Length: 173
Image (cartoon, rainbow, N blue to C red):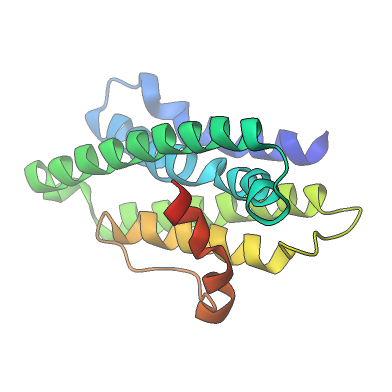
């Protein structure tokens, strides 16, 4: 499925420096993996799957498994963010404007891949209880929150009114 392969491609780009001997490259791999994979990549699907239980009382078992998995992914992401912030304190010279520009570029590519996945999920129509625009705002907010957690300004504009429709997710997890 081309859409999923696009996601795999950006995920692979995020971790390509994980085996580098250069500590800066390795730090970038940790950053991209923590922020965009652990902290964002699966969360649109988590939101969608849990919405069936929330709004239709369907898939309770799946919802419970997704809730547990999302908590675990959240913890992994937060741990990675903590490591990145420690690295930023210990090596501020690594976190240049050029480095930040690379991160923002990767973030925009990651958002595009995630949008394609959401479009693919909703290709046969939207759910009456969870419109696609809610999922897209939710993803943009997660990317923004990830960036802000390491001191980079948010990149994407979001609509607070639309985001209110997904606040229940955070209460659940």
